[in-house]
Every structure is written in structure tokens, then in C-alpha cells.
Length: 470
Image (tube, rainbow, N blue to C red; front, side):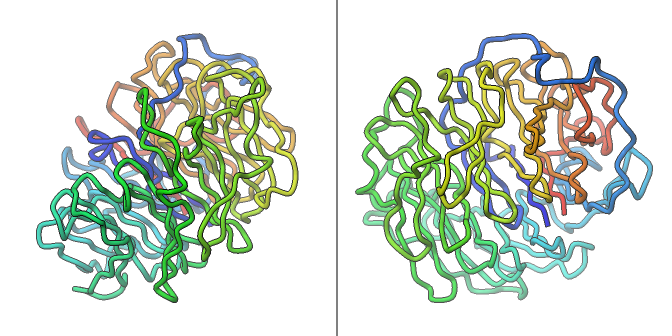
């Protein structure tokens, strides 16, 4: 199976945040600003092909693509699905959800979908059957959902108890009108500003749920791991561990991105907890308090700690990828290393990256065969995110496409996923018109393509918001 990241635009309009899980839910970034980058021209070194050409034909593998958006009718936001290569482009996805979908998450095998619809939580089979209301919140919002990889349990974030104060809950995915269990701790005071974060991360075996939030002290995002088998909670990063203060436009200290579950019962997290205020990688045990700084994942720049901007874990759990500005401040290089921190990190970019970074909005993803790494990055123009792939064995970095006007930061690529054969990317982008996101696919051999043909072409006013591939 392969996972992907997606983005809920309505929630992003309120706050930039982070959420994700091994089952393909919605990864989202923390509220920190992206690195500054000066406008520039495309970096020819990223694209070994001599000149851009017409994209290759649409892949014909059996990848199932799930999309969320108003792809069929303007302002009617649903989840749909199609099999890549099974029909001529453009494809009209088959509608899966019977109700509007504010957010959604797909089980690891692609058979079951959880989604929020207004103040209700619903679950549906991938073919659109057995659509049930798992929970009606009675007025509270449900802002995020994450179905466990095995499809049996749904985690969600809601203010169903106190308006404006969000907690984390779990509920069985297979029955209507279930009873949710609150897994985040009670607050010392009922302050609506003391929120759980938009971070939900399941372990691959569906036993553990990691989440973050301001549970003890305002403006300190802790990291907790809930054991669904024993109904116990471990605090890997607590308020007392978070020493950095909020200042200078920095995000709330503490956990800033979805953690990942590595082999051996380990959790790897990106957090800003030291007095220097730098984001660093930490590692802890699923059932124990505390996390320690990773030796090889945190690099120095001129003797001072470099900032780590994003991370990803391979499908087999053995390799960690991350981006850090250890060479030049604000210019983020990509590294890989053993997830057990047993050996030094290897840089897989050229060491001369311009200002910019792989995106935290749509987190880096390993291909299903773990031989490649994909991400959106704004290395050519500040805030203009375009799709890149690194073939790790070489390593070879290639920008697959120039999205829209090369000088327009408002046209970029967003959510994406790998095809099952690791040979292509499926991604959303507003290539043809600003703020009109369509769905495209390109083989990883593509280079700086400009003649993109939509796979899903929404009607006037419509968009593809999120993408999940299985």
C-alpha cells in the first residue's frame, strides 16, 4: 500500500496546521511561515532532459485514486474515485459519499472511507455502499478525521463538549450511532484557546494513535500517544519539556508536524522545544514518557543547529527523510538516514539548493517501492510549489512540471499521491488557471513539462482539493 497527503482548504483559511496518519489521512503543516525565497528562474540542474516536452500517456496501472472536491458540480464537495488508466482522460470520478465531505480519510487497503459532513461523522465503503452515520455530534464541529489503517476505528477532532475547545476522540468505524471515547486529557481550565492540534497519526498496526495539543499550558503543544488496546496515554513531549517561547512570528512551541511510527515501537517527531527555538528531530517509545534528540537527524550550520523543516518515513519504516538548511540558511536540502538513528544522514540533493523547501502542506512521500521520494518545493520562486522526485539510488533530482506561469507564485501544485507501480505521480494543481485546481498525472521520467492535460477537469468554479491513492 502507499500513502498520500491531502489538504482541507476551508480549515487552512483559518489556520495553517498539521495532521496525518499511516492510513492516508490529511497531513497539514504547523503555523510557521515558509522560508523566504527570492524570485528566480527554474533551476536547470534539477531537470536533466534537454527541453520540456509533451507529457507521456496516462499510466495504465490499477491505482485507485480518491479525490475530494467539487469536481462534478460547483460547491457540491464530495469524495469520488476512479481507477487510473481504466478510462479515457478526462475522467469523471464515481461519487462515493452520499453527503458533502468536509474532510476524509482512507483505510490502508482502500476499502473503507471515513469523512466528516457538517456536524456528523460518517463511514462508507469505497464503492459508495454502506454509508452510515457513525456519530452525530449534536452541534459540535468535526474538523479532522483519520481512519485506522485496518479500517476499524476512526479518530477525529471535535469541540462537541465545549464550543471552540477541541479534543481528540476515537470511535468504531463499523456501526451507526456509536459512542466516542475522548483520548486527549481533560484541561486544567476550560479555556477554548487550549486546543488539540490538527495532528492525528496512526501506527501501521492500528494500535497507537499519536496526537498533539495544548493540554497543560497554553501555547505549548505536547505530543501524546494513546494505546487503544490498554486505553492508556504516554506523554512523549510534555509542557515541562517545551522550553522555547513564542516570539518573532514563530509557531506555538512543541510538536509542529505529524509524528511517524518507526519499527521497534518508536515514534519520531519534529518539534520546537529547545531554547534556541529551532525545529529538531526527536525519538521516543510509544508507551513511555520522554523523547530524546536524534543524533544523526539534526545537523549544524556553522556550529549552530540547522532548522529541520519536514520529514517522511519509508513504507518499510527503515528510512527517514527530512529537509534541513544545514548548508545555507533558508535553503533546505534533503537527507535520508536509518530511522533507528544508527548511521549518519546522507544528502540526496546537490548541496546548492536555492532558498525554499519541500512543502509542509503536502508532506514528502516515499514511493511504494521505497526507491523514490516525491514532494512539492518552492526552490524556484517563493511560495510557488512544484512537483519534484528524487530517485534515491543515484541520487537524481527532477522537477516534473512547471506549473502555470513560471513567474506566478499563485499557481502551484498541492496534494499528490504515488501510483501503485511507483512509476508516476497523481497531483492537483492550478496549472491552467489560478485557483482552479485540476488533477494531473506524470511519469517520474517527466522533466519540466508544460503541456499538462487534466485527468480530472472540474466544471467552472470547481476544484480538486485532496488526493489519496491506493
